[in-house]
Image (cartoon, rainbow, N blue to C red; front, top):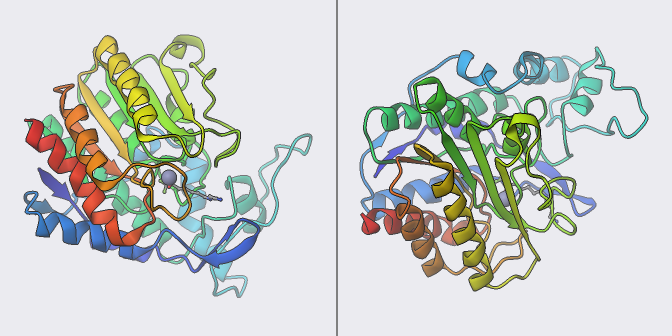
Length: 343
Ligand SMILES: NCCCNCCCCCC(O)(O)C(F)(F)F
Ligand SMILES: [Zn+2]
């Protein structure tokens, strides 16, 4: 399987995130991608190519232009205030506050952020656009006839919505790639999110559309991040009604429960008649993950890959989460090798 990778990911290296009420070193680190790349090489998964630049247009097919401009300019405006440390918001436009877009960077940081764990740094825009190019290059190769491609995307993307960032995500790599597949002639595309956390951003982007089916298996938002989206009754709106499937599972759910949800999701993808599949591949479903609470073990990721291959669809894998850095490479490549072995 071909891998698309850019060293530019290392330009996103946040120092701290507010997690569980205290500032801690970021869990989303460059070493995550280093470990995955090492495993891709060690397991001889296939060729590794660098992304081609695609510019802003494919990004603006799913993201708000003002939001993109904010991401592009935020660091310079923040550091012009004499701040040489990561940019983090300090409040939110909560219920019954005005939905006005502030002029000042500090206010815009609050307006465009979902949480206080997604630091904007000097390299954020460069890293995020390189991740989008990585996913888009993967989509290009799928259109070119590749059966499956792995986009080693970092920073991740599935929490980034039409006009906000959060959950370590700035640009929604999987959504940008799914839209590119649509623009290149694929009539129906499915996005399956197997990260521990609900892909609120991807749901937000495609919620009112019937041409892109979104499905997510994740920790129940009643107790798990992102808390405010990802419930089973969210089925889409307008033309998109019936084209959004959430499978929230209680924290601590066993592996067999997880795979029952996966089989339900795969059945929906087959019924939809998808012509291509984009997988938001987070491996924070791993039993040893420090911030998540599912029970998959490394061999289960091989099974996951094989089940996905059973759909017999051109498939683009976009890396999302996974914070047990030691085993992340094994777990990610297990999915990809399991997919390949199923043939
Ligand atoms: N007590 C746990 C608090 C969790 N705080 C933030 C979690 C962000 C998860 C990010 C991710 O893994 O979903 C992504 F794939 F986007 F990277
Ligand atoms: Zn996650």
